[in-house]
Image (cartoon, rainbow, N blue to C red; front, side, top):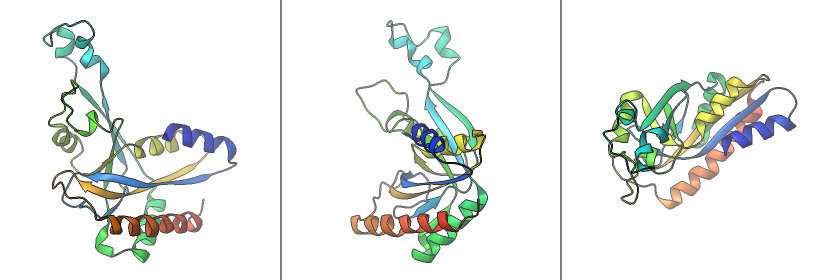
Length: 207
């Protein structure tokens, strides 16, 4: 839970901080193929399920209710920026350890759910999300990756009254367009080398 992590870390650290989120994600464009590592240099958008849209389920009202007509099932928020200098250092350190063609940069999108707001279809639930990936790309044309943590890190870093430099990089485990999945041995290699690159970035950045 990124909110908990950032706030609790801030509470026990004096002075400026630098935080990098390194994890996994799904690729939503051809540039973010399985087995690549994407640095969120362009920041992170945010998509959330809108519970008010689905309120007709509470009392068996029809979807034709006037309230539902003016609501959207999912809400998009303004992009939260990454720290440019830290992101540049992250990219440099990754390229020292990993094949250059596997390291790319772009715009991330964070979803608050692993399922509904990431477009995973579950017939047991009313989610209205069959075209959610297309909607994400319409809202954020430069989006490359989709995961669940980065936006809140970037958002809180900008809202903190004591400086926090924030960046993120994520291994594309699966590409949502092609349905291709990274090889297990390659994933382990990227986790190890990528993690080392994050540590090198943190110790080299001036804050």
